[in-house]
Image (cartoon, rainbow, N blue to C red; front, top):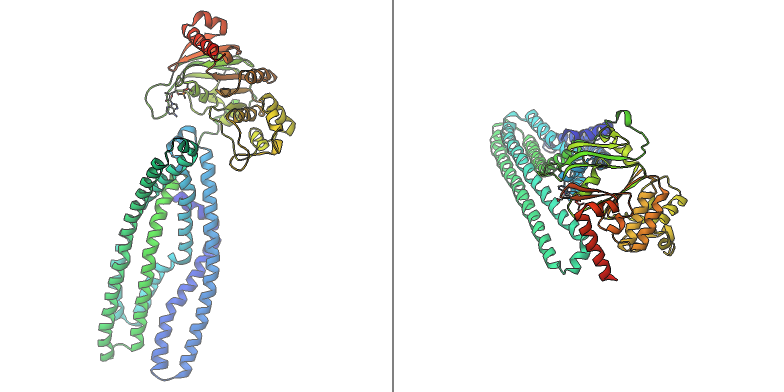
Amino acid sequence: MSNVFGFLRPYKLPISIALFLMLIELFVELLHPLLLAKIIDDGILQEDLAVIIRWGSIMVALSFLAFVAGVINSFYAAHVSQSTGFDLRSGLYSKIQKFTFSQLQRFETSSLITRLTNDVTQIQNTIFMSLRIMMRAPLLIIGGTIMAFFINVKLALILAVSIPVIVMFLIWMMKKGGALFKRVQTKLDGVNHVMRENLTAMRLVKVFVRHDHENNRFKKSNEALMEKTMSALRLMEIAMPVLLFLMNVGIMAILWFGTFEVNSGGAQVGEIVAIVNYATRITSALTVFSMIIIVFSRARASAERISEVLTHEEEQRGNAGEYSGKRINGSIEFEHVGFSYPNTRGKVLHDISFKANEGKMLAILGVTGSGKTTLFQLIPKMYEACEGRILIDDLDIKNFNPEQLRRQIGYVPQDVFLFSGTIRENIQWGNEEATLEEIVEACKHAQIHNVIEKLPDQYETKIGQKGVNLSGGQKQRLSIARALVRRPKILLLDDCTSALDVKTEASFLEALKNYSCTTLMITQKISSAMKADNIILLQEGQLIAEGDHEQLQKESELYRGILQSQMREEELNV
Ligand code: ADP
């Protein structure tokens, strides 16, 4: 949690100004009952108008001073809380960018979104309240009690007994509340999670007519959120009546003993009015305090959740050493590589060895779940191999700086993702420095240029929710162009030509010859694999055959089996 407080450090000056102004407000508030006692005892009871006017004017002037201090304090409180919120969001966002792939899996996406939005808002509100009133409440309680002693020791003792009891009760509430509100935030994660899934899969929900099921799912998580929030608030709401009761008992006692004191000449009426006034002010400060406890308990839970992200270990930006920044040639070699995902049992890759020579194309064939995508993830160092070595340009990948290496890799994932914005922006996302000519060239090679030319604004056409809708194959080709525009030395194509027709795919593979890069292509189609210089066949995480099309036809029974079944399918299609 301390690293969340660390975000306040740059705002020391405005915080000090806000606190100073708050002290002025507090000072005036504490003086008021004293002035009131003076007006009653020396002015009203003595029927001295001049005294009433003098002290009355001082009271008005001080009130005005407190008002001005309050307005400026609000300004600084808003400035500090909003700026800290901004910094926290930026800090969290850039921290998440540095997460390794496996770390990202630890946090649910929806939970990260809640932490970055709602949790930060809780902190923001608390900072604002702290600077505006939070500090005032405890200081008013302490200051009020001291002032009461200053006026009349006997009567003030009654106040002094009841306050510590109440404060201890409130501290207990805060501890309990913190735990309860942490659960509330987790339930909020749940609501966001269902919402996010539903919006992403809206098309599927509609086609499968699963609205009712989805509504129920949302209702359940929404109810869970409501229940947890209610049970947290219920506890918090006990606070106010309890402390009001205790304070009212105290005030009654002051009035009761006060009457005896006035009769015996031990106190003046004005003093009793002043002490009751302090008691009511302290009561209202305690009421504010109980509200603050709700806010603070929530903020504590939120701060812990934010802290969890901020203190998470970052991806090593490079134990880079000698190979950092090196321009690679692109040959890739796996030497007895074994891999299992973090926190899972069972290996996904076993003893994989192969070599893809510089500038050549290697096809990776295998049924779903055989480990093809996993093998791809190891090359840009999304995960580290558990056994064996991976060499790039004959150098162990461990020594490469991940970012430097990734800058030289073009990756086309199986699930296409395009960002909101124009087509040009989406391609340029792959290489910010690419000129329009380079973008057009990449699109020509990816066999998508002709389609783009026919769109209303060509390369400036907006895609996504507010723009044109593209077909699966068109999106695939844009995603390919985004990788090509990087002019990568290693190109990883994860089954990204599945939606392309045979002719388009052939033209694309031909166009790849314009790039001096080593290409690894995951594919389900032997017709595509045939065009590669070499093919490896994976089965249940093991490399079971390697060679070119002719060799595999001769040597691998499995390969022959796939070939025959695909040829039969083609015949049927014809
Ligand atoms: P392919 O690309 O050949 O379809 P994958 O590499 O995606 O196969 O998956 C290989 C195996 O690894 C599967 O059994 C899958 O369940 C498992 N797997 C994939 N991704 C993860 C992950 N992030 N965590 C744990 N297991 C995974």
